[in-house]
Length: 215
Length: 117
Image (cartoon, rainbow over the protein chains, first blue to last red):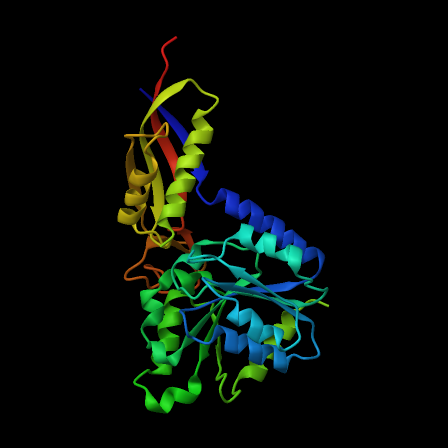
């Protein structure tokens, strides 16, 4: 009987492809966000609002969905390049899917690329896609304890967008508690408050994105 | 939910490792999983056991090492564990900390039987 020491990272193949994607994006000066959330938090609505607000800037979108291309259709109506990845049941995007999708997408130069992940706060946190940062979106209807329930995602994200703020008067959710919980998991989180229904907070969010698009 | 594909990757890593060697049986596989990795050990074990049938790993046991989160304080440089996922230095209370363990997801060792020549 023999023991062999491997010390091999299980997601090494994914991470190698993610690095390829990252150098692809770097060459084109793309600022890339990996947008993650639960289903129904408003990812596609935020993408739409962002596109409308940043109409002077070049944006392209990679949409991830388990079954349909409905989200890509919504984004395409706004006239930006978009590609849909249908995962056929898989609960997250991986770097290989993103690499393949780039064959059908012109990401432009000095531009923003939004990767909208599959709605899931668990699995996507383990997969590097080659993005600059993960942005976790949470809506106030999900409750202020959500960061504590999904700590890995909040720890791995650089930015947290709290959405549906127009509903705050009707809910038990305490936004200050929500922020405090998110910051206890990740004190470096940058937090934005938005409502994709009223448009509140979208400008600040878009300004911050623009400041990150390297020109 | 992605434990099945992680189990598949574990098996592929082991198969690639033993391919050039004269190994007739894999007795066990040990993986390390950090607490900040979204993997359920029981689901991973179920996936592993389901997928090893008919491979060189058939019958192998999967050992899962659970790696707790450890942080290092950027202010006082103390290394400590954390309570209830509060990323706060146990020594000085600073929140300016970096995570030094808890994100492991590795195949660390395998126990094999080699062919006797």
